[in-house]
Length: 418
Ligand SMILES: Nc1ncnc2c1ncn2[C@@H]1O[C@H](COP(=O)(O)OP(=O)(O)OP(=O)(O)O)[C@@H](O)[C@H]1O
Figure 1 (cartoon, protein in one colour):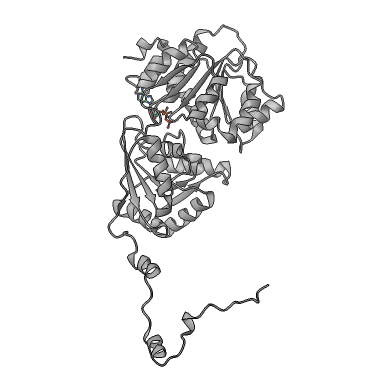
Figure 2 (tube, protein in one colour):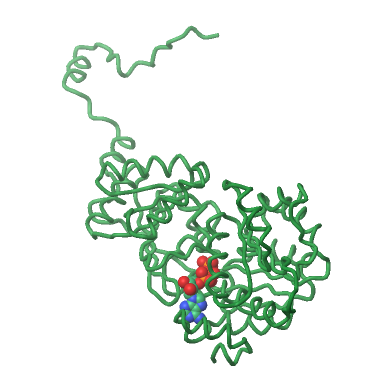
């Protein structure tokens, strides 16, 4: 199968070939004709398999094909993404795929100057990529016209339709024409999304190129059992002893990300963190430096779990497992992209085993956690807490003399009982 045989315009296939894409991926083969056919879609495919091009290329084709000379520019395609970094990336993909075409893409997201974004919008565009919060702000202030949108794409659709975003999205939807094409793309879909899709998609075509919710085939997954308080040491040991140069590490909390980055810095590993409490400028800088190899390790919350395409990234480590099993699939999918191989390691403490069970159920795999030599369970600690302490010589003597040891007596109350 070739891009040309999928019915794409020569102007577009020329650009794709220049970018080095030889054959379409399975999701592109299945989705491109359906998007050209103006179908509503629910499209699922593993991480890193080219879902962006699967919607971007046919949408560009349709814009170019229907372009009238002297037509004023208006937004025909609206793509919503859950994070600002992903919005920037999808926008960059549209720019790359539309080289030489008379098509303009604009991106709007929070944490950056709204005036700069308004200036860009004033130039006119056919494609708008946005995060929901900033777009809603523009909509509410009547600064943007979405009345001619022909296609709405929800990238990472399951994330977009969960609690955090749904209210904003519903308000944005009211400004879009009812008669439009709607496309859902993600590597994961749960039952709730299926139910919700019935209200948002019209007679949708379901495309699943592999079993639902599967991890990327090219990612080797290892699970290390480790005591919670030895995780950071194990992490620094892994990166240092194996001399890994570019590692993405996930924590569950923003504070945890900062603390871990600091600790790793002390271990001599150049580390930065990225999360929602950082300014957008800092987030952009850190990600650019990490991509350029200037930072060896990046500690991230799930703000970096979805969609980000970091070329050549080989190692992902879950310092903590995510509460949401779907996020495991997305996190480890930052490696093993576009046919490359990758390694994903998860550090799992005893208390996190239930999260591992949730992940196993979702992805349909059984993992065998292993203890890394040198990081086996601290038997002394287990013994100390489980076994009775040996009495000291002093205590034995006191016992022999019939005295009571102060340590065995009840602890004294510091404050009188109330
Ligand atoms: N047909 C193709 N041939 C070669 N490379 C491709 C092809 N299509 C896309 N790619 C490349 O594959 C990489 C992953 O693509 P993309 O980011 O769209 O994946 P995705 O399926 O959206 O992943 P995720 O689920 O993580 O968002 C990108 O670097 C892209 O340039």
